[in-house]
Length: 509
Ligand code: KIV
Ligand code: ZN
Image 1 (cartoon, rainbow, N blue to C red):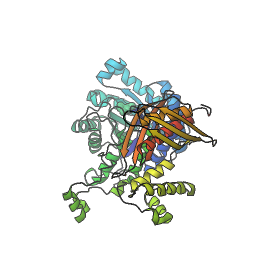
Image 2: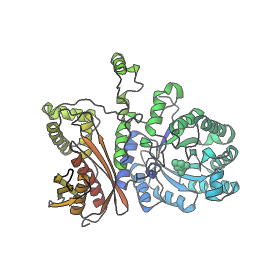
Image 3: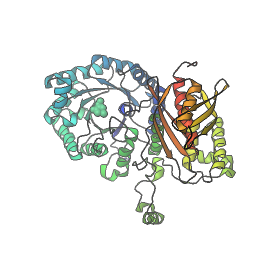
Image 4: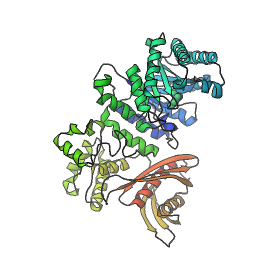
């Protein structure tokens, strides 16, 4: 790897969480933070501490738990109370950064801030200095930098560095820049900001025109050495630059960019699945690097070429990104030992009790399905290692549905006290009826906001994966369920979301 390293700054837990419907609970954020640390990101932007008590708590928890393995960053506007709150949330982190931002473009100055240029420069200096009282590691972002006049941007960036900023981030807040324009902007700053050698130049690109990754890479070519990005490209509106794409572009085209990252790329598909599952945001099948089709070759001519030599049509090896394809796994007669080896080859270390549960599920699945694929095994493992405390378990259900009949579901659940409770409900369809019956038993009032089904492997008997988003008491909860029966997968997904909601509420709720 080249000695010239690009810092990977992940903002999945801050900008990513700003994606509509993608809010995460603190335990979910901790789980993602752990995966980010294992992935090898340099900086985790854990949240915006002043935004809410929940944001503060999450940043604090991540700072305490992972501040020795990555730099933990908290966002703050150019306001005293924001910076103090970020400082307080990060106090226990061994490595911390405060990220201060203030808009600089004429549109934002005129319509949002109603501040003159001189006031912007003054506020920048004052608040960067204040942030430096909490940590030596301060990042400054002139928000909407890509639409800011270059001479003014130069002035603000220089003032921020003079005041103590160690990283200067140049956000394309609205995804308006083009690669050559953004390249020229970074080049201009390198040439005209007199103290630029005292700070790292960072990119933060939004994807409104689908150019976030291209713009980030253009900035690296111009000399930027930090990329702000998110897993699966989550983020405000069309999202941010996707971490997996920028990292694999730098790695695959190392011959061209001549820089490296510290990312363990074999973890990319795993963390993509985790983030998709906690946010309820599915990854499109043809998404670069982590989509289900990213390494699938359909055309005969391609398959023929691949059989001769993989390099004919493959620029990255699937195993380098932890891609789990359609490999056929062993049948139930292969036994526990072979199954455990496969689980380990897929990158999972399970304790004996969890392994036994997954193995039992595997045996049941083999009875339902002739071909069991790696993707099926991963779904079974993730189902058994989900964090949601199982206050309620699905025991049985029965549905009546069809044309000319009212969809009706009878559901039996067992709670963590060992009691079995049963109820029935009608609904708009069988899924709605099952969800209504679950709600009646648990006594939670939920509104189903999102419902998606995908097949996780191939063929008629493939397992279906259902992802739901449900609103309970003003908070969104996501759940995932997998089964060869779509209604069962739906019931499991909804119940997982309800278990998460019940975990946030008093036991008698
Ligand atoms: O897009 C943006 O400008 C931001 C800043 C807070 C860096 O997210
Ligand atoms: Zn942003």
